[in-house]
Image (cartoon, rainbow, N blue to C red):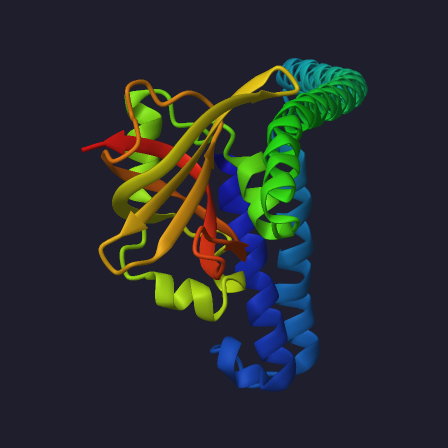
Length: 308
């Protein structure tokens, strides 16, 4: 601690020296000649001597501690450098791994996109093939249905043609085209042979249509089912082109003549019986009666004839 004492003494001398240069009487309290020279002698010399002694007694620096500290610092620096290098290596490894993962993800995404595109094209191709097959099947079914309908229509047309020819033979006139087409489109009603067909024919009857409407103008009623009841004046069964048919003439309570062509036989229905004829009106015509005059009549294509 001796070095500290001389350090303080040297410092006090330095302060006194500075103050004495400013005003010698502050630091020199003795003698009459209080000059700056004496201040320099006393305090300047004391400051120099004290500082020299301070330096002389100053303890030596512990080199071992410095070396150890330096070694520790070097070791810590080395460790820090290694840590930095390790961190840099880890960071590089992480960046490399992230880049590889990104590359792998992009590759997988690309493969997935290619797979999806392939699946989409295959699905579109399959859908197009199915649509084509469906369209062809529908076209084929439509063609077959049309051919079948045409075949049925031809078969039905034969029956309608027979009715037309028989009607022309009786009246000398052709039935209207609408009536002809109605017979073609409803072959099961001419004649209505089953209970279902009879019921269907009866459901189409328009009871508001009378002989007065038909004698006035038959054309609007070619496709309307009508029904008349009367006494059988004459009935004749015959065959035309291998098809049996019955010609019936009835006389209604209103004194109107109704004739009908029924494409079949009528069982035990005879002259003077009362019968109801259901059918469509086809022709209004006149024929010569027994008294030498003419009788106006309505010819029906009969769907059903019922004996009452």
